[in-house]
Each structure stands twice: as C-alpha cells, then as structure tokens.
Length: 454
Ligand code: SAM
Ligand code: SF4
Image (cartoon, rainbow, N blue to C red; front, side):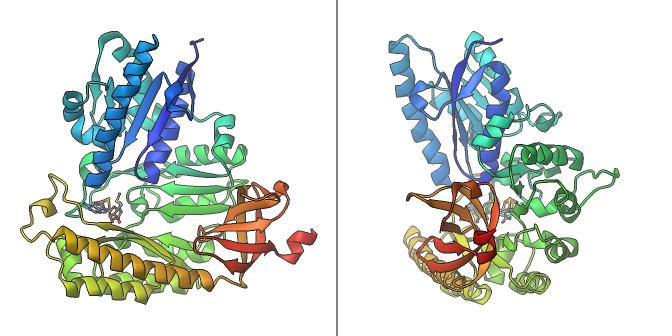
C-alpha cells in the first residue's frame, strides 16, 4: 500500500481537458494520490493546459510563475512538491517549458498521461522528465477506471471521450498538431465506461471529441459504427436518461445522426455545431469545406427531424482578410439560425498554422469592436430563446441544491440552469418543470402538477 499523498489538478480549456483531468486523478489514485481542492496542500500539482489561443497559453506561463513561489514556500517548510504540466501546451511546447520554467518536474503530452504515475516517480528520482510522444499504445487501455465514490463526487452528469484528434486542418487551428490524427475508441470500451457511470448514479452522458460526429469506432459486430449507432446502443444502458455529444463539425452531420435526433428520445434536442463564420469567402480561407448554404441546409434537416431542436456555435472574428461585409454575413447568420447560445473568439494567430502566415491580418481594435457586436447579437438571440421558454414544460435533470433554502437547481434540455423550489430528493432525477420566469442567465419554474402530486 502506498503512503497517501495529495494531488491538485487544474484544468484549462475545453471539456475534453476536464475529462482528461478526471482520468488522471483516477489513474493516480492507485499510486496513493488523493485529490485536494486546495493547491497549497498538494504534494503533486498537475496543470492540464490548453493551447488553442494565445491567451490560453499565456495563462499557463503565468501560472508556472506561481508554481515556483508555491514550491519554494513548501521547500522552506521541509515539504517536496512535484509540478507536472500536461495537455496541449505540454505537447506543443514541452522543450520550451523545460527551458523557461525550472519549477516544472514532469511534462506530459495529451496522449501519454496514462504514464503519469511512472513519470512522477521517475522525476522524483532523476529530475525533469519530458514525455510528449504519440505512443503506439492507446492510453485509454491503461487508464484506471473511476471508483464509484469519485463518480458520485463529480455529479449526475458525466463526460466520456469517444474520439480524439482531427484530420480536417482548418487553417487557424492547432488541434491536428497537438492532439494528433483522428482516432475513435471501440464501442465496447465506451459502453463499459458508461455502464459503470450509470451504476454509480450518473444520469446524463456527454460524448466528447474534437470532431465527435466523425466517430467511427469498432462496433460490437466488428464493423465501424457511426456516432448514431453508438448513441442508440448507449440509450439502452439502464439509468442513462440523457445523451449529448460535442463538438460536431457541420460536414460530419450525416443522415443517420440527424435521424437519431428523431428516433432517440434520450438524445437531447440541443446541438453545438460550430460554423465560425457566415461568409463563404472566410469559410473557404478557413478550409472549413462547407458553405453557408450547406450549413443552413443541415440546420433545416435537424429542425425537420426534431422541431424543438436548438443550436449553439463557435465564431471567430477578425480571421485574416475578414472585411466588414464578411463580418456582417456572420451577424446575419446568427439571426437566421436564432442560436440559443454561442462562444465567440477573436482570431488568434497560432504558430505553425497556415492562417498565421496569411498577409492580411486584421487589426486588434477591429477584432475587439467586431467581437463586441457579435456578442451583442448572440446575447440578443439567447435572450429571445430564453424568453420563449416561459410557459413551456420540459424535463429538468436536477444536479444540486440552490442558493436559497428549499431551492434545487438542474439543467433543461438546452443546458439552461433551472431553479425550482422542491425537495432535495429530486437531486439526481429528471422531472417535468413548467417555466414561469426568466432572468439573464437562469430559468425559474415549478414542478409540473403530475410530478408535484406524485
Ligand atoms: N472541432 C471543432 C470545430 O470544428 O468546430 C472546434 C474545436 S476547437 C477546440 C474550439 C473552438 O476554438 C473552435 O470552434 C474555434 O472557434 C476556436 N478556435 C480554434 N482555433 C482558434 C484560433 N486560432 N483563434 C481563435 N479561435 C480559435
Ligand atoms: Fe480544429 Fe475543429 Fe477544424 Fe479540426 S475541425 S482543425 S478541431 S477547428
């Protein structure tokens, strides 16, 4: 039995990093590490980093300065702290981190974190270790499954990564370089993971992938399964009441997946399908390989399959060469689709990607001004979507107690937080709620009569 030590894992960036952080914690547990929320108490600190935009990367380097201070304070108190940098910045800039940040002991890329316990042990003996290979073995085969207590502590909604990497090479994006070529996990492994989560009380599963709808893992019959087939099988797992998937690429939104939204009641009617821009000229330069019309056609098919469907997206403003007219095409697309929500970013030049070398980079002030206008358009659409929810009754998955006594909070099918006065016993359950009121970022409702009486 290993002596008990404490690990603090700090996640930056996307949901895939949140999932990876959980799996790192699960894999470190048999080596004697228990998780702590207090960084000051940790014997091992893991920064699980994001490289997607320059800002995300800068955050990591400023955090590394803090690590040095923490480490020195611990050393003065006679305690040794190990610092590991994991994830996409580690993958892309491992050597640079080793050079610039002497506080770092372990550098581990996104595909090798199953080796973390061994790397930590090695660094304790021999100093700094760097592992940024794309190993031939599949890390998922070597990761420890989460213990039931750890699953319960993480709540009733869980992520499961089913696909990683990307072969699309959008001209602005580092993912194909940091996460590698596209690869899908076999269905049997995913089903086993979902069964384990459901047995411990998880009711909602979100399947994750950089391009989740490009999923093509080995199915139970030995053939390649598309995402729709995997979703249909997961819908049969006892206890799983809700299924979601993110992030989708518009080009991979194939017929079987659209039909799954018609046929699977547990598949939530809310899809994140990033378009990035509403201008065909920009879409072409971004190498998105679809047009505005293709995208709108796909939205139309999804709405025909499931009339209560809602959408969210990612947008980039100030991509090289973006004119005011191109930008206005994006604004008009937002109104045409009527998004329930969206993320928006200023274009950030990433070294090694084709767009970073395009000549017509957009001025920072123009980017900021466009981002402001874009966010106003998104907020207006989201507010309109929320206000149309008043008087509707829909299922809410209750997750936790609210801020006020007697209040509990859950999520609508559209991921809006919903606050209801109801017994704590509803936490972990799905119940019908009639929406009575809307604030800027929450819905308020009452249990539908059949539930309240039952
Ligand atoms: N695979 C997804 C897709 O194709 O839409 C996107 C995954 S990426 C991790 C998440 C989002 O980050 C992208 O949709 C894009 O809006 C944004 N992003 C990626 N690279 C960026 C860059 N260089 N500058 C600004 N935003 C960027
Ligand atoms: Fe990046 Fe998504 Fe494009 Fe792949 S499809 S390169 S992950 S933006």
